[in-house]
Image (cartoon, rainbow, N blue to C red; front, side, top):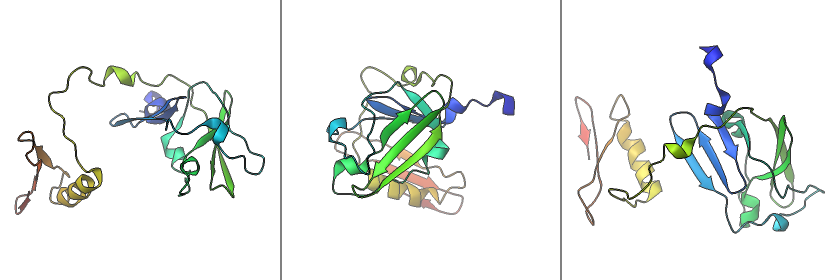
Length: 173
């Protein structure tokens, strides 16, 4: 129902020390790179970035329009806040030579209390994996299942994580 639509459930929340995104099914919280200092951000074509701001939200879908340049300089591999007011946010990227500024409509409302759903305390198990290798295996194996399902089995410390996918004619592990 359109009247029930809550844009904050598909938003990205920007805070001084972290960025949080959700699509109401998945959640990602990423801290700000502590090695990046505002005062070290390059001033290109007279464009400066903000030193501080109140948290704000913008559309995750619209944020996909921002292309962050690839650079050997970590400061150039980041997104910076140039301007924030009650209705608009300007985000800046640079490759040190050129500046790209994109404006976004600020989303009003309150971001979901995501910290309340993240488990606290001691974990029952911890699995450390190569993210790229796991993503590649999951992508390949999920093609076997109509529902794109892959089962992960954990047998214990120092034992391999087993991935299983199947359909009515074929299986993989």
